[in-house]
Image: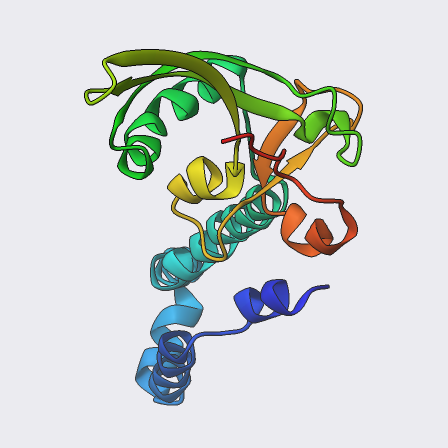
Length: 199
């Protein structure tokens, strides 16, 4: 039996004080004779006094077990729509570094050149930049990629302590990404999780 279950089954201070009071009352001969002659009253009285404690044991234990299971296996899958939303939200941050350029999200795709990463971590945001040189009167366009830090841009939004971490169900399946608590213990065993940028 676990410590939590053992603690739940232990008597509370209130239960002990009630038990002591009942013993003291039953030590009075008149009261003892009364209850002895009426056993059904004794049964009803005991059930009334201890019903709250009995229910507490049988109701709280399942809740604690459920919480433990939820805490251990908590996970949130990351879809391609989530990745697109992340890429769009990163536009403003990129624009701060490229003030002279217009940045437009183009797509989210896999960087097959990032062979140092497992396939599941090869997602990148693709942007198109438009640069206008007012002095030369020249406008140029180019495309660049930006690696996605999914811990910072997605997993951290869930209110857990410690924070959820990025992980996967199959390292060869790019669509198996999840934010999970289990990854907190496994994060040191994975290769880099952010594809390189080409800014």
